[in-house]
Each structure stands twice: as structure tokens, then as C-alpha cells.
Image (cartoon, rainbow, N blue to C red):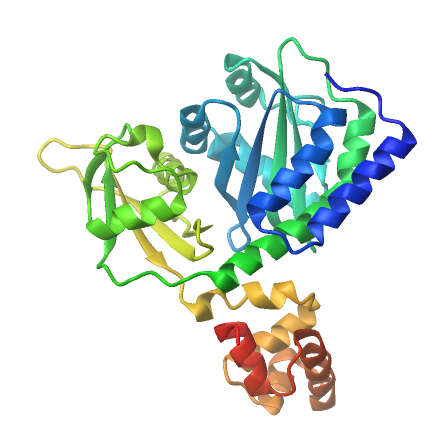
Length: 359
């Protein structure tokens, strides 16, 4: 499947991928170049590109090239919360970049291995794209049952590339968010699904949101074509219903095709007229103030600088910022000076306009 990588070949791949990651490309163009650089030497049978919600640290999107989109989307509802959410949380917490979850790295994940085996997958390799502990995306490579295992040199290569992939993924995400056009006001977006994932009811606005989130052909029986973020919401409801009553279904933030960010909130419907197992999903766009945390991230601000910026956005004075962060007012001014330089503005008003309004 893969040829042995010489040192010169490895360095060439690293240079190509790094150049792509820092070229300001769109998400699609970035991954096209990265995959083209990797595949001849690494080799895989199928792959999946995943996207995270940096706020909840849940996977909210998957561009699957496994050849079976229905299987991948069902995975979000039936498998992800049982084992993979824990797996990715462990990766993020430990600062690990690459893992072989179907190998020695996770021997206890028998249900996960059974799921992959049922689809002819022998091994999967996950490369997490994260920046400063914040996950932005990931590349999952699959090899079928007849293929050889991933070589140690492949794992080493992906570990070198992972932080650069994180930077590229973050840049592409933030760029699309800045360029996104707001949704037209079309009323509440509500989707009601039965226990099989088929549509029971939907509003006109819901159809627009589903199209923004992924494949949707408008068919009333669209369980086969639900976007990954919707399947994730369904899985979150199922997990809560099977667990302690104190658990709450998390709000899920997903980036749409045009770059806008959408909040999905799901709930289990009450049984009426003999119906059980319905899931109700409400979708709405995130307001500029709600995604203001995205733009500070693109300027490479330190954690403390981001705290200062957050308080500036809320209208806090220098004295109030100093009191809230327990630092001197002169230190606040120093932080602001550095922030202004990084963002390319001269004063607080310009900072707020740049971060909230992209001006």
C-alpha cells in the first residue's frame, strides 16, 4: 500500500504540506493539496475529514470518502458518543496529535473495533489538527482488512504535520466565518425526526439550514441524507436519555457551507398519539457577538490577551479589566498594545469593529 519513505521524500512532503497550510487557502483547497501530497507515500483505502466545534470540542462535520455516507452519519448517532467522544477528548487533554485507536492505543474499545470490522476496516489512523489545545479538525485514514498496517515512519510524519494542519484548518475556518453571508429571515427552523431519522415535520427555514449544513435533497424521507451535525445532535439526545436525568444535551455549533455558524439544540419529544422516540431539533444562526471568540484566535493572541479582548468587547474599562483579572492597569495597557499590533488597529473601537464586524 505504501512505499518506504526516504528522508528526502519525507522532507519534500513536509515542505509541501506546510506551504499549503500557510497559504490562506479555503478548506476544500487546503485538504485537496494535503491529501495529494500524502497519498502517494502514505497510502490508504478510505479517509474522512472531520471538523470540530471548538466550543464544545465535539465533531460536528465529516467529509467522508469511505464510499458509504449513510454508514458514517449513522456512526455519529450510534457509536460516537459511546466511545469516540471519549477518545478524542483524551487526545485533546493529553496533547497527543496522532493515534491508532484500532491498535494498541485503545485495546478496550471492542465495540469500536467491531463497528469498523463490520465495514471491512482493519485499521484507522487519526491525526488531530489542534492549536494551543483547541481542536479544529482531523484526518482519519482507513485501511481495509487485506492491507498492511501503518508504518511507524507514517505516524512520525503525521505527528510533524499535525500542528501545521491545525494552523491551516483554523485559518480556513476563520476565513470562511469572516466571509460568510448572514441568513435571510425565514422564520424558526424546526426539524422533527422519528427514531429512524426520517422527517416527521420541518419548517421551511429548516430546509434552508439543512442545505447549509450538508447534503439534503428535499425528500421527506431523508434519513439517508441528514448532515453529520444533525446525526450528532440525535446521538447526544440518545445518550442523555440513556444516562442520568441530570445530564443536559449540549448545544452544537457547526460551520455551514458558506462559512456561517449554526447552533443546533436537540430534545426528545413527548409521546403523543402513540408516537415515541421522536427528536426535535431547533437550528439558528450564531450572532456576531457569539462567535467573536473565533476572530481573536486567528491573530495568535495569548490566553491572557484573549481574556483582555473578551472584556473589551463587553465594554469594560481599563480599571474594570485590571480588577477582573487581578493585574495592574499598566499591565492591561501593555496587553492592549500587543493586541492592537497583532490585530492591526490603533484603538479599542477599531479592535471591536475588526473582531465583531470584520471591518
